[in-house]
Amino acid sequence: MKLLALNCNRCGAPLEVPEKAKFVTCTFCQTQLAVQRSGGSAYTEAIEKLDELTDRLSDDVAFLKLQGDLERLDREWSEAREGLMLRDKYGKEYIPNHKNANMVKLGLSIVGGLWIFFPLGFFLLSLPIQPSVESGLLSFFLSLIFCAPGGLLIFLGGVFAKANLKKVKVY
Image 1 (spheres, rainbow, N blue to C red):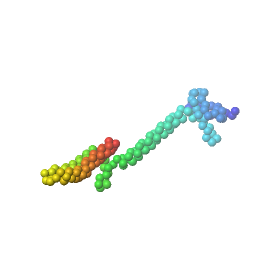
Image 2: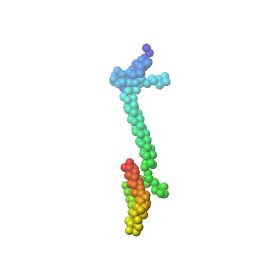
Image 3: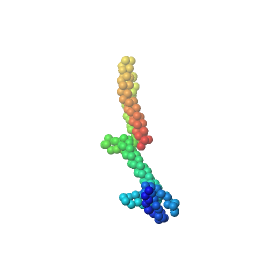
Image 4: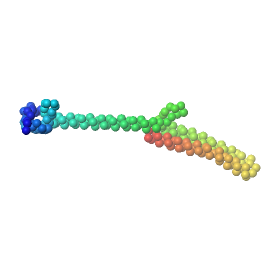
């Protein structure tokens, strides 16, 4: 068995190490050493140093993973944010809020309410003038038919406001 003449990396004591050995303990300072080979030369390096380097590298890798996760989350939020944005009639994007939702709901409710009450008012005003029951019923059903879009507008206002408020909660 061939021996290599090396020195302890920590205390400098001479060591005789078998040629195939990868690790050795210094008999003087009890430091655990790794035998490093580079080309035709060999030297020792304290394992503690290697552990420090390994720990530092693992910390760097963990940091890079966290940084990558943060960038991925940022990309996902940017994509999700696009879907939550609302556009006005000019194409300008804005963040949904309670004020916008309530204003749309109020506007559609007012228009829908007026749409309902005008045909009903027409029917009620025309009651004393109606000469027969059939024409009165016809007037009543026509006013109901004309009232339906108003009710639909009120309903759609509520649906739009609810959908908009869901976006506000997510945003």
